[in-house]
Image (cartoon, rainbow, N blue to C red):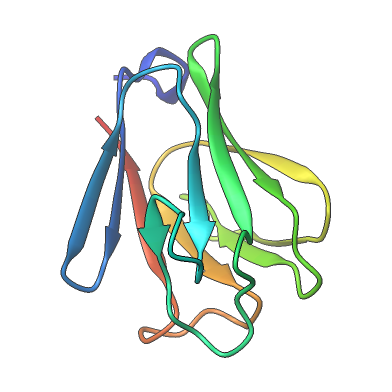
Length: 109
């Protein structure tokens, strides 16, 4: 399936598993009111959101420390107060470089 035609985006963070299929955005961060709590030193309460735009999923960063995203082609992108389309499978790290301890996995299904 082409990433442009994906119907769902799946996020995995340690033992948490979140499926995005609807038009409602999801928020990542450390706050009690976010959809996926990512307890890391450099993550903000309301760090970033992922929203669906047509058939694509877009990460929008709201943070001070930015977000690292590695996409399927292994390209690493740093975003701060900007946005990036998530395609294929990859990794997201809130406020610090990607490591196995910091990375939220994303995949299209």
